[in-house]
Image (cartoon, rainbow, N blue to C red; front, side):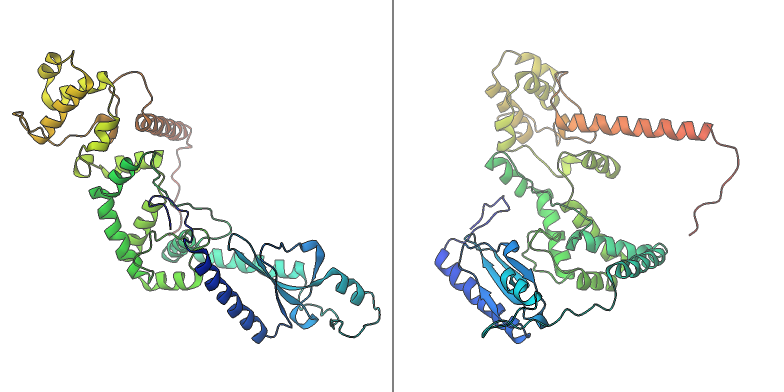
Amino acid sequence: MSDLFGEDSFFADADAFWSAQTAAIEARKAAYLEAGWSDVVIMARGDWFRSWDYAHAGKRKGGRIYVEVRESGEVSFHEGFVTTKEAKRLSGGGGRGEGDAVIAKPVRPEVSGPLNAYIDLHRHAAVRADLAGHGGVALRAMLAHVIAGADLWSVDVEAQRAPKEDIAESVETSSAETAFDLKRRAVLAVLGFDEEASTVTGRPMNRPPFAPLFARLLELPDPVVLEVVAIVMGETLQAGSEAVEMIGLHLGTDMRQHWSADAAFFDRLRDREVLLAIVGEVAGPEVAAANAGEKGKALKAIVSDCLEGANGRGKAEPWVPQWMAFPPSAYTTRGGVGSVKSAASVRHELAVSAEGELAEANEGDGEEHPPLAA
């Protein structure tokens, strides 16, 4: 069971869940025993694995697997542990009574921790030096990092949470969302993912492994990879951000092709000053002036009739409110329009950047410098 517009979900039948979960735990236990572990201890449901009561011990040293089962249904497998009492008795060289675990002497690893670091850092330096000359491979690696996740990457999917159910439904059923979802399902199929998955980008606790995903991306031609990039970027593009503003400006996004006024829009449209301005846009300034004293409900009806060509009013051209256009603008000087604020921030940042480039050019030494190596 889950909220249609949320991320959290739960099992409606607890008994059925625990029956399936217990079977899965037993299967894991059997796999551990088959792999050579001496014992697998399934802790009582709700008991916590207190790490200070245990000491690490490898498979060859008699270490066990402790299975921690939480009331929430989460299961953790703690590999290679014995109790601290056993560890002290055996490390102290004391006698071993009947039934005591036999722990082998520690085996010195082939390489030390510092040497491992030396190896890892040099291999890292070599790989990224080679990667710097292979942009296509780097693009695929970056894309796999976003989809599969990595320790140094933190990427979230835009949840499109709405404060009201009708707003969420309006977005979900819009032509823009439908078009994006069709392309997303095509990408899911190309990558071999479940076509019914809600996103291409993996979510925490549900991320695909990096290696096979990267291998698949290496098989795909550049145009297809760029289609995957576009979907993943769309999924991780934050609503209301300056990025939406800048990308929309660059692409020349025309909201008239993706949006039309609906009930959810009119329900939130309550400011008389704004309504009069909108009447002027869709019906003309004369109609707005003639209805300046009307209440908001009547003004909304005029706008709706003009947009639909109903009740004797001529059908207006496709229209979007100024707040939703690229670039957006406000109807009043009172502020409070998020899209307008983002647009102002983008203009400011672009202006500062342009001033900085001009200053650098004026301070140049007049010499020509070669471009970066291809």
